[in-house]
Length: 130
Image (cartoon, rainbow, N blue to C red):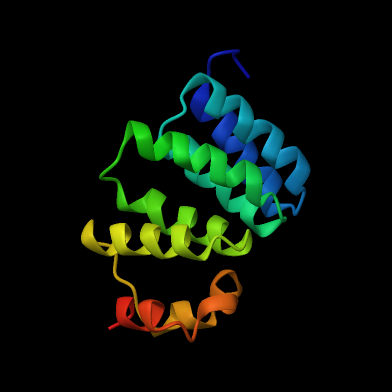
């Protein structure tokens, strides 16, 4: 892969992820994100990180991406998930609120998401799902 090929790193990450080689996929996605830290590189990287327990790194990457693209709703739900897994209830709920305001559909399926298990009965969470 050419050293500056974001698409090449993303495609290789996708292939590795499909082969369930998550650590290698993360390496390739990180290469893409170092070149272009925008939503299109951060989203696949953080999806694997969230699935494999890399909550701190996912939160950090997503916070940076949200600073660069504050109105991109694709970033806010994963940010809420990272924060939920880390036990940061108020911050997770704030990210969910912002996601909804940005046009992200929040529905009852989120109540089953393990990231939100600690506060799924919180009235603030229930209100966001309405």
